[in-house]
Length: 324
Image (cartoon, rainbow, N blue to C red; front, top):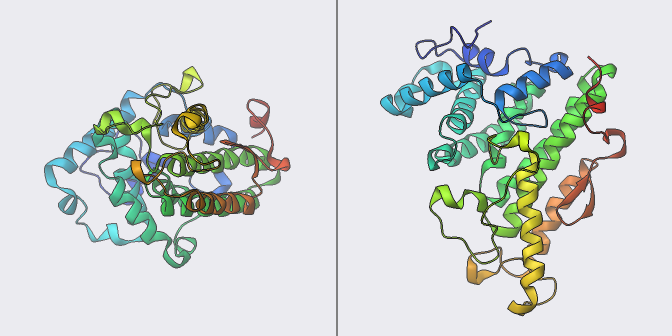
């Protein structure tokens, strides 16, 4: 297996990239608690992620990113093997995940988001990803959708992650079902919260500072992760705390200032005057689509910006993580 110690820019095969990034978690048969934990510590996303960064992993990512900038994307990915399903997946991971680690806290971290969202959409056309990728690989096909500041892509993200959750639970062994319920629920919950941020603000406000964007009325200027261990992790990857707090704080700010703005009751948290989703009816229709996608996955609505797992999957660490 390729390791962080011997993978380099000269070795650009898809298998080398997937070995480096996915490690031991390659199929549903590998979806144990230990492998999820080790993977999320490497990726710095998900419920087991921590703020500490592995310098070896970061060094490899930096080498790849710097070489991409020197050569340009077309030349860097010119090998025909990149057009194969495995090559496509490796390319998507490199473009979507590597800059988030290397350029965290700068606009370059989001520079490839439009491209990776387009590639992800392309892979999902006519459900082609089911024929080309296993359930673990499909997670990385869907993840760029949740990074896009586009509500249609966010809605597709929820739809895809809901289906992914069902398939993951169905494919794992019975003794690993509970930990995978917890993991899949965490991912769906985070995807929903990403979509709700777009519903509220039409973009991710926590990116405003690094993107040099002016804050709009009602947007949250700064949101800190709820758990200290998550500070320093990817601020908008699948990991619900920061997004959830942004949504909750945005709703609270809207409700607090609504009387002064004299907005109609039930109207959207922003309107056409600030580039928002539009009328109250439009916002409710879009919100209904998000909720319907969640309901299809067994996620029930509790209150604004709060979702609950289906009863069989209700659990929280560390009790949820017991097992293989």
